[in-house]
Length: 47
Image (cartoon, rainbow, N blue to C red; front, side, top):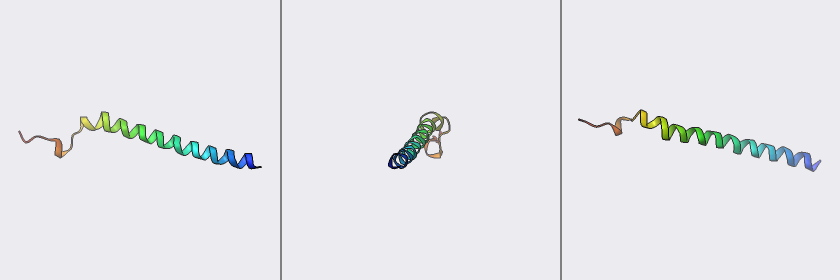
């Protein structure tokens, strides 16, 4: 019975870590690739 409970918590932990990894990869992609294509008002020049 202890093994079943341990495996459930281990699976939950791995699912959370995997979800955070996916969110981190998406956020890094948006920051490195998409954000430079659309600079905000701070990055604009007044030429």
